[in-house]
Length: 271
Image (cartoon, rainbow, N blue to C red):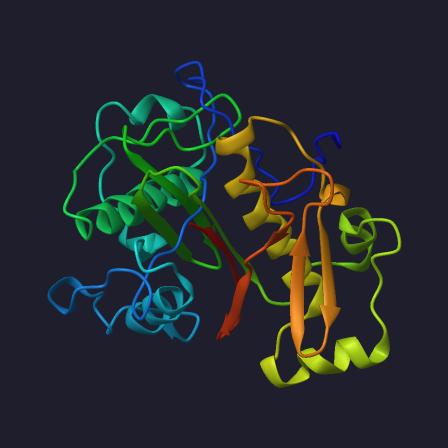
């Protein structure tokens, strides 16, 4: 297994409770429209817009990428609702911006769970900053560029969810060199295949690996490094593989991706 890599956005997952008052980050998650659950009566307020992206647009894209049994939600960080009492201690000493991100992530998660007909439940934080979901629920939380999003679904054997959203183009060459597996370069023709999507290759690679790790940890409880996953750009397909570390027996993971305005979205949904 690879060691943890301390990079911006790297948040390995765990389940053990954090000591009260310790700063906590969000997890990540998506859900469905043609895939997951997105009832029209509780769809996001399309008038809410951040960075040129509105709630309805982001939720529709997340929904289109998600498994049919999952539910998604997106919330502007500025629209975070108050935390539940069981959650406040995890960000008691955090700066205001972190508290807002944390609150928006929990707001998105509860909104997604409501679309499954469950909750509202508190979502504490595990030792490695993973959301601790209610029994019978799996999910993922993410935030970037003024947005928080979540995906949740009923737990079942063989299921896993991981979601990551990044600002498209945020990955510098220095970070890119760190997150690439050995020999994980890209030929010019492979890079050219992404041009129609508008996605920056290394940002997509970063987001894909984050999503894979968020899906992987709750299932196998092993730490993995960026170099343990490989993203292969082979037009017209983009593959995400875990090599010697299968997830529910699969080494090649279903990997959905999209660009929404300035956001790059990566989603791993198995089951």
